[in-house]
Image 1 (spheres, rainbow, N blue to C red):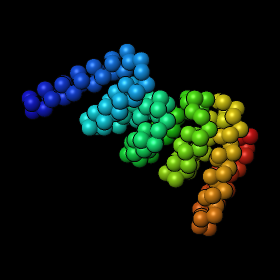
Image 2 (spheres, rainbow, N blue to C red; image 1 turned 90 degrees about the horizontal axis):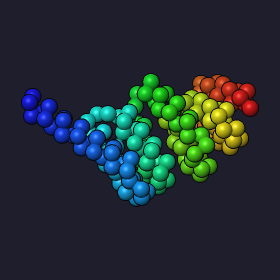
Image 3 (cartoon, rainbow, N blue to C red; image 1 turned 90 degrees about the vertical axis):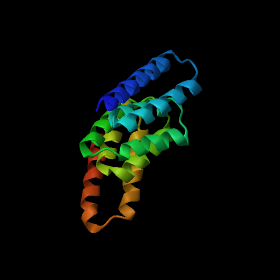
Length: 167
């Protein structure tokens, strides 16, 4: 028990040290490396929300395949309420990601949580007024229709109507 507390304190100190180094770092490469280290430590101690924030920050900084894979792997660990909260935290980035990255994020969200993907797209549209978000949502809905079962079609219709009503 005592050793466990000491180990936890050491990890907390190390994370604090990394967070301070992130704030002071000036190069993107160093900052990316530190964010990856922080994210991995937070996953290790079970702080999935903190790891997700580090993954999002890393994705904002370095739009690489590796950073996207880390982002999506952490998102998959969330339960439904946490996914909803994570989606809301992404809305604040509506104007920061380029269209290519948003397409990838939206495609991922549609594969994991189609309802949340529609909410994310419409909220990002409301904030940024970039029609791109509605286009991506509609494209993903159309792709979903092709492989949907009869029961699922009514839900897809609702998503479509919600998206169109937003515009």
